[in-house]
Amino acid sequence: MHRVAISSTGLFVPPEVITNEELVLAFNHYAELQNTRHAVEIAAGSRAAVPLSSIEFIEKASGIKQRYVMEKSGILDPLRMYPRLHPRADNELSLMAEIAVAAARDALGRADKTAQDVDGVICAAANMQRAYPAMAVEIQAALGIRGYGFDMNVACSSATFAIEMATNAVRCGSARAILVVNPELTSAHQCWTDRDCHFIFGDVCTAILIERLDLAPASSFEIIGTRLLTSFSNNIRNNAGFMSRSEDRDPQDRDQQFYQEGRKVFKEVCPMAAEHISAHLAGHGIEPAGVRRYWLHQANLGMNQLIARKLLGRDPAPLEAPVILDEFANTASAGSIIAFHRHHADVKAGEVGVICSFGAGYSIGSAVLRRL
Ligand code: CO8
Image 1 (cartoon, rainbow, N blue to C red):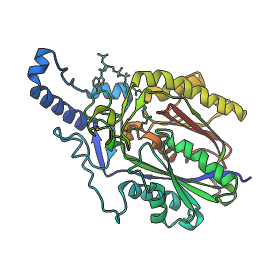
Image 2 (spheres, rainbow, N blue to C red):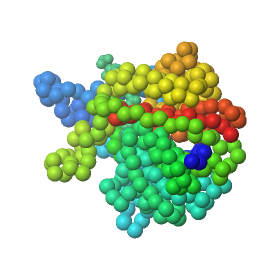
Image 3 (tube, protein in one colour):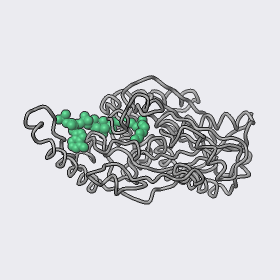
């Protein structure tokens, strides 16, 4: 058995930003157009008016101030309200693969590694662009990596579940290094016309290079343990799938995009995540207070503060559980990896940190790391 490390991470940031001001302006314009069009039914009580959104609510309820997206003009067009993404020919690199390759190259460069040092690619994300061939195989080919690639989806926990898959492959010797990529094009499956969730998501891609410790750079993070948990819930769902055509579904049907019971998710997932992290740390003989940094899933600021409070018995200092969702919003599986990417340089040799993600499923995944 080999010891395993995170050698590096990489980040692709999409080219366009939508601030809360722009988002709410477009949403409220959409709401007014809808309410004017359906004024008679609304007055007769046979249809509910679309309520207006507010910047104050969004920032207070979530902590989100802006989000990056691949294409914003379609999202902000009150007659459209979703991105304009152009189909590509089969012989062109697909969009998900393109952003994954960019993040992967960033990760490889930071560890001073090349495609020849890697034996496999796992594409782990909340949605895949197509059914087949696997995104990971296209990404593997574009990078020139030998070996194998496969896709996996555990919604917001996809990255941590993939870290465990990659760690096991490297630990048992079936690969020297695995590249995990998390291309999250959330804007394509977000419901931008639902006031309760139109502000939640952003696009991004992260990459994680998981490598045999004896081959990894000197200041890598050893993966001393991973732990996964799932518990079925309908509170976060998206019913779009390969049977939608046969079910005569319209892609605009509300259940063919992301929907959730946000408050129930908040109440149920916070205690589960705190207990999961405590139990994982206890398994390694580590007290929650002995952890230098928690790189938590980035869905909601209040959620992260509550989980950190449950773990520490007090409010966390800003850098104990760093926040990136103000800038990126919820980027599904990539959030905790962005937090790690942006906030690991000051962790000292011997200090411990925890990456933890949680979301639809429900699913929770954690990795306990020690800096070399
Ligand atoms: N502007 C003004 N008012 C609003 C708005 C708005 N935009 N939205 C809601 N309100 C109103 C509501 O109507 C409600 O009014 P009333 O009290 O009169 O009924 C009031 O504000 C309070 O509404 P909520 O109870 O809904 O508000 P919350 O305080 O619960 O906050 C949140 C809503 C921010 C959504 C919060 O519940 C939350 O963040 N929960 C956690 C959700 C979460 O983490 N989900 C994880 C999903 S991610 C995942 O697993 C990956 C899925 C795959 C990715 C999909 C990509 C598209």
